[in-house]
Image (cartoon, rainbow, N blue to C red; front, side, top):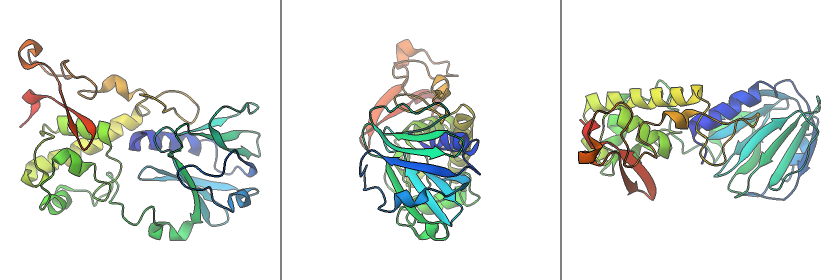
Length: 278
């Protein structure tokens, strides 16, 4: 599933081509994805895109009539912009044509994505967003904030930091990478972390996400940029997907340690290095 860096990268790509462009065509190739398409989706025809924003893993396309097109990529969704003549592909479920001839195509083979419409002024109260925690780059996301949220959490810190009601956008890949960077054992109970470890975790989460955004996200399966190119952060994984190998920057003897370990937490793979924990 595309995580925060991937969604942010798509937003940046869209922001280079969509603002100030008018939507002159809306083509739906089915009536639903995870949820039904909005009944009035066709009403965005004739509207101009003002800005592109992101909230958590949602792409927000703000329109000049005070509404926002909300898009979630789900597990396999791709949102790309083509300036060539549109050639339909399987699983192209929504195609928006712009006044310069470009097409914005939402392709989603597994159909776990979604498209919705809402009044921009009411987004904070929308059912998709009311339960969400702060953004990881928000000033509210601090060690003190985590201490308060973690104090009653007996679950493993890896699962706690992935809780979107606590902080948004820290998905499976980046949770493993951030915990490794902070030298925190992903199996530790969240409530057991001391202030210094929490401070390191906040810093690591932000740094890992910023680095991943600069690298254009991670392309492991379906994810591509808005222009169809691939992300590059998978080339920089320290532990994720490296079971049995050395973690990057580690001097351990994998003949003795067995290298990076993989366990399952919450149904997802967690990767960590025993010698890099404090």
